[in-house]
Image (cartoon, rainbow, N blue to C red; front, side, top):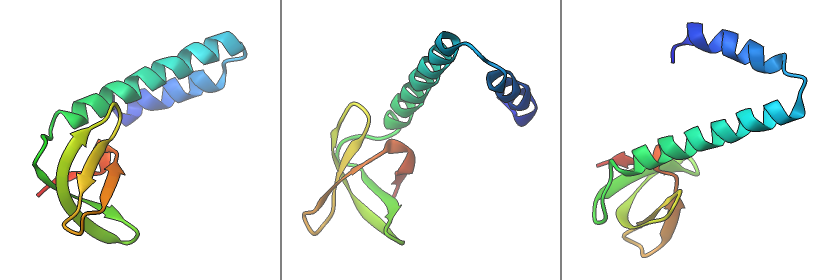
Length: 91
């Protein structure tokens, strides 16, 4: 979806005055977010070296486990981070 298609959609959502309709839209957005997260997770594999930004610095580590919505990344120091796949970059 491009920006030109997004603007009328957002305007239509802003005009909704029925709570049930809005709840259905929210559920659809959640399903779409979950789908995108799953697609992003498929770009990675256990044992792969990845990096991500946290606390103002770039952190690198190895993927050790996939969770339903996140990925476990173990650093060389032994520390384990739980990271959203959307924040990871393959090294």
